[in-house]
Image 1 (cartoon, rainbow, N blue to C red):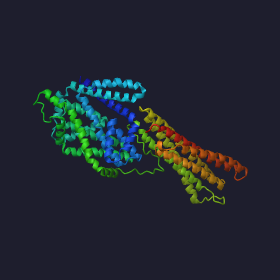
Image 2 (cartoon, rainbow, N blue to C red):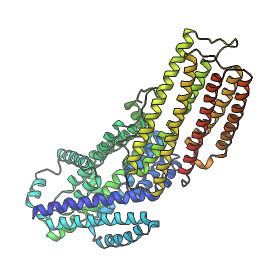
Image 3 (cartoon, rainbow, N blue to C red):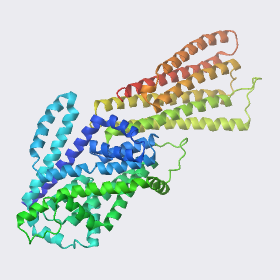
Image 4 (cartoon, rainbow, N blue to C red):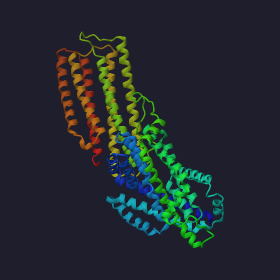
Length: 586
């Protein structure tokens, strides 16, 4: 029978955790893009930042999702680290709503709500237009059913009369500071192991409301749970970028500081919260009837929820005045990684371990694609520089001193390295997007991922075009072929100038918002490039016939012109994909 109860308890917890995850995922699908815009717009100061963090976390029922969005905005330059810290403080307050939902489920029979949620949810899921609302109701139903089963299982196990359990907890002195520290550590370890603060909170509520676990030890477990969640995020952020690690450290600092001051006023604080709820801390089991004792113990789930909320609100109220100091501290502890962005390949925004919410990981991928796009424009700038180094002097003789040859070879090697970087970036971003697409996503997000895959493919083609031009210039330079005449150089610079303008327009779109971009600017430049290419193609035949230069020189010259025209086509493809990928963003 004990094994049956054990598995029933584990199954109830699994149902609760899955319901919570399903509910959170559905809410993010419904409101993900809008919440990102709210997060960017409502963080004008530390107080609105904290309020925003509270509301967003309460809306999506996931402090992880709020943290991910916040770090994404820091990376994008839309939020400062100080603003991010205030949002994370608010997220800690918003996540306490979960405890209130659970305390209600532990105290009342909410099974009828769960069955109604299942019935309405399945109808909406099959009505595709409202399937995300259906997913949410189904998740809510699973959460409430898990809580109901957990409560009933706890009642059936009669934990309040389990001698082994009672003797185990009574072996700890509730007044001892060492006992408080021990249960605090236990709460942190349990949360870290099961990767769910909700599950640990549910176990604590069951033990407390049955009368098996004294209130002081129960609240120590809740405090440990607060620390356990920050350990998880800090370990996940180890492989992340500097700002993500700083945000995770600020989260840990916030919770550790809170635990330190609450330990100083531990028992008086608990008595104050118990007084609000109407729980009698001093009621002894032997001094009253069993029914009176259990009725008093049943209030403990609300005591835990009230403590969790009060603790986080007061902690945020204290630390919000010291955000600049916290920012300086985390920046002092975590120094930026020293890496040469120009020469070393690494993804700056995508962090495999830190992204736990696929629906919101798209923003990280978009920032990485923006970085990719900027790299490709720098690569094209190197090609223009390479052409200038190889330019002949007015007498037609090449200025190939040892210094200029070394400079040429060094620059060509950098372009080669950039070509390898572009290949790697395409593969790594595509791999990441494939992992994200494996999750259950909204149609809007699936569309964005398809557009992003097209963007990276076209950006890699821009890198190939740049490398092809560099190889053509290098071959002409190293094989001591005759150099272009001044008119050819003039036309090449003019064509490259138009191509550079197209790349600049593309990067303005990639770093801005679709609504503020006039796509006609890109199409106008593309038309100029095509018309100029056709004009030069016709002029090239005339110049060869007039013996202005050889046919071989004309072929190399037109190869460069045609490669610029191809590059312009790739830019248009990127712009079209980007405009389409953001059409539904508000």
